[in-house]
Image (cartoon, rainbow, N blue to C red; front, side):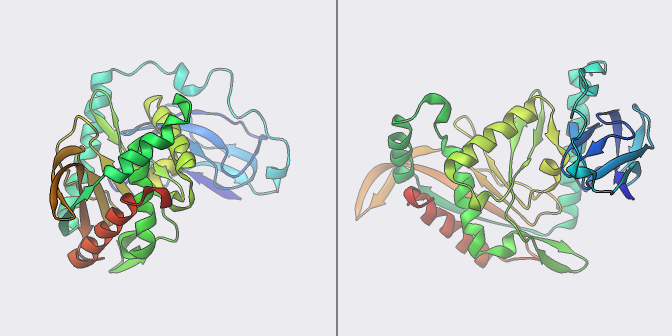
Length: 326
């Protein structure tokens, strides 16, 4: 037997409210299949099973606030993953049946959750900060040429280059893809980049792009668009919100020149990009106008140091100045 438990989606999360079940006792379930919807301060989350088998018992009624780690159901691990499962969702999913929450109230809950996480981060994690100015001319020229041959729906945004550049640079600086746990640094085995997504009216989530260093730019773009759509429709999966190993935040065209962000626990690094600005830049001894972006890194000083952090940003810069290799 395996217990299906209320997941933890961050150091600040104490409980979640079970909205409803997508399975009933006797239904077969595959590993990774969505079986419940839970409401947290981060919104409505689809929770998948971490075991394959058959639903034996449902322990919690919809509408019940349940602490993180408490059992929600019992799954009989009898190889049921090979059987044909019941439909993944009922005709009307739980999130559609619940009364619509007041947007102001939801925003307040999310801001409180963000505040608790950031207070924990600044209190417990000794941050250091480094920055690097990156010449983006080669990247923007390559992007324009690449997109010119594609339909609009398949075109890349420059944010995809930033995500891939960070993911590839982490291969050479694995201490930034780590967590401080029980008095020592623990390296994550994979690179799952959390992509910060702003939600209206006032909120932020950073779901994970799994194995971002191994995805092509087109795959990364497609998966990022999927995350944005699910974030805005409140249909992110629990694993997408809990599996990120490092976070990237980009302020976009209307943002500030730089962003010195706060590390998201239990991660040990966060990379920020400001908006691209055309400024004077020296190239081969001549002052020319170039599109520049400021990249910043906030690192956990227990896990890495500013010297390695600076080298990491230089690696990101080299990658972005050679976009064809991303």
